[in-house]
Amino acid sequence: MDSSFLGIDEVAEVPAVAVVVDVMRAFTVAAWAFERGAEKIVLAGSLDEALALKARQPGWVALKDGPAAPGFDAVNSPGLLRGVDLGGRTVVQKTTAGTVGALAVKDAPLVLCAGFVVAGATARLLRDRGCESVTYVVTGEDGRAEEDLACAQYIAGRAAGDGTDADAYLRRAAGSRAAAELAEGVREGAHPDDVALCLELDRFSFAMVAAQEDSLTVLRPVSVPAAL
Image 1 (tube, helix red, strand yellow):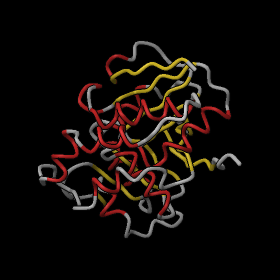
Image 2: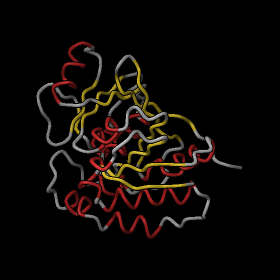
Image 3: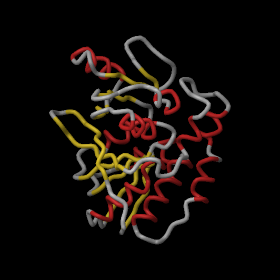
Image 4: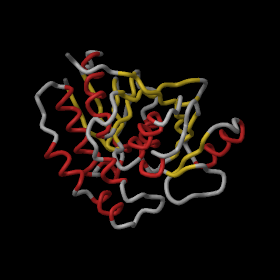
């Protein structure tokens, strides 16, 4: 399996398969939203678009980075979201890096969104579909975010079936700037458990696939059974 690792701005053409990685915190939050019952997640291109979508669909839940803001129902924190009942709801998500990365490759035939919490399922789906060439979009810090790169490299190793040990990758993520900023309270709209939740390996048994639905980029969970 041929793997490349690019920042969002480095993606020059539509890849055959894209895995968009945002560990802290967009796609950890997305996974928790599905765990809490969300039916789908619409990835918005701007805060205004997120609010406009919610205005047209009042039952939808709008979520953003940073502190709480008028019109938004939740913030981009797994620790805060894990107690919210989202049964059957549609979530509209707009974040600084993760959703931007997913929208940058939305036209790829297969787009997966990932973090450590769905790493194993993401790797299994890549193997099951026989993906030969995969572009990993490292969303944070212009492609240099250590937690995202570590997760992307870990998924690539597992997808290739090389028996990759997770410990070193998780240590890299734990030592990242994003982890430090969350732990020190630099980032607003956070919970003390966010770092630990973002580093919880294979918490969920589904992968997350983004596809175009009625001109929107929609993320849905796809169950990927563990190999026997």
